[in-house]
Amino acid sequence: MAIRNNLLFAYKEGYETPNYVGKKVAVVGGGNVAMDAARTALRLGAEVHIVYRRSEEELPARAEEVHHAKEEGIIFDLLCNPVEIIGDENSWVKAMKCVRMRLGEPDESGRRRPEAVPGSEFLIDADMVIMSIGTSPNPLISSTTPGLDTNRWDCIVADDKGATSRKGVFAGGDAVSGAATVILAMGAGKTAAKAIDEYIKAINN
Image (cartoon, rainbow, N blue to C red; front, side, top):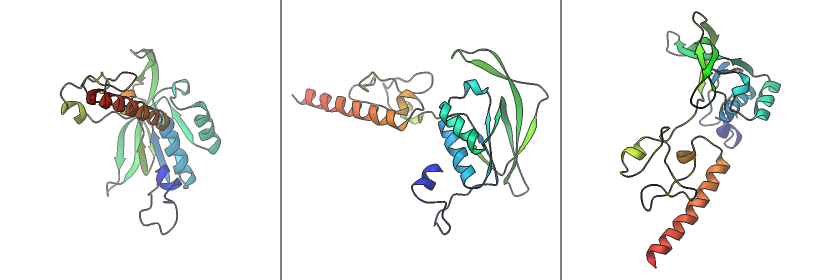
């Protein structure tokens, strides 16, 4: 949504494929992409809630992104988790049911595990919900490529030059590191390209 507005001018009246933006928008997630989506929706005239299941201290977005989102008027519903999206008679979103959360014991990542508080369900009025809760590589990549090792997050295992467990196959970016920045993905691509060039030269000599 942000790219279509910032680069393709989808916010302009008369645009052939405009972005639809609700009047009350709920963005589920707490990363940089969630902040992008929330701030874009706000600038297009919506009331915006960010719904995140942990506390502010655990927000994965950069601190300045969170600061600017608050400054612009984004509403943060922290320690909340969506459990149901409710539609109207025409199957359009009209609300999102959430449950209050509390932080329990740390999980395997070291972060305190969010737990639902029984009987704490409540509704957020919303006519648009944007899910921004992380990404994972397409599982078809590993399932259709024999000899390609992946980790428990389904990310491709590669060394610091991008070489995978399958000879002659290189990878980089989010498919290896998990969700990160465009700059890191571009850097990984350049590193892998250099390694590919060296690999091809070696097998041709």
